Every structure is written in structure tokens, then in C-alpha cells.
Image (tube, rainbow, N blue to C red; front, side, top):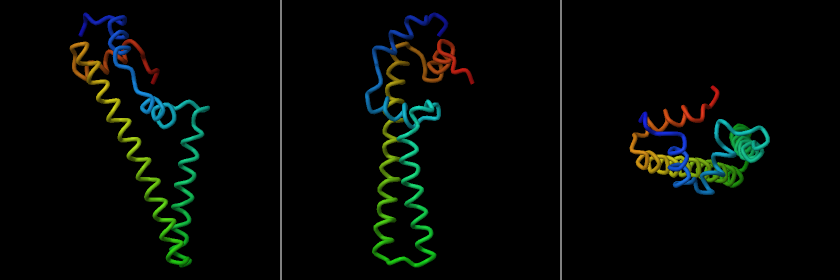
Amino acid sequence: MNEITKLHFDWATALHPADPFTKFVYKYFSSETERADMQPGRIILFTLGALFFIGYVGSFIQLPYNFMKVIVLMYCIGLGLFVIMLFIAIKLNTLRLKKIAKELGVSLKEYNQLAEKFYPSGK
């Protein structure tokens, strides 16, 4: 691990770039999202929250069954698609990182240490 330089690390990383889908998900829905890029996440969170709230309140005030069925179905589909999207992006990125680590001849844990060494996150 000690013989890997920043240049070699950058070369291996450039050899296996992230796909557009993974870039999109990590840009808009990661914990390190820039303030300017939070709009899609806020829209999804507001929509899911509104659907949940309507379903929750609707069960107390006994809204019509068919209306509640549509609300719950929309909430389940929206939440399910969102979770699946995040899971796929995480899996694709993990596979990419494993390829980079294999290219460098290190384990995934050692790759993370190198990434932190060459590009400190500042936390």
C-alpha cells in the first residue's frame, strides 16, 4: 500500500469512472450534497411526506377506501422506487470501487484509506 502514489491512484480511478446514474444519485441524494443541489431530494421528501400524512390523517377521519387505496399505493410505489434507486447506485459504486482496488492491488479497506489520504474529506 505504501508504494501507491497519488498519480497511480488517480490513474486507476480514471480507468473506472462512475456511470451517469451513480453520479446523479450521489450528487443529489448523498449526505454530502451541496446546498444548491438539494432541490430534487426536497421534492421527493415533500411528496412522500405529503402522501404519508394524507394516508395517516385519512385513516383517522375515515376517507373513502378507494381514495386511501390510491394514496397508499402511490406512497408505496414512490418509496419503493426511491429505495431501489439508492440501493442500485450504492451497489454499482461498490462494484466500481472493488475494480479500482483490484487494479491497485489493495483491499477495499486499504482503498478507502488511500482515498482519505489523497483526498481528505475534512470531517
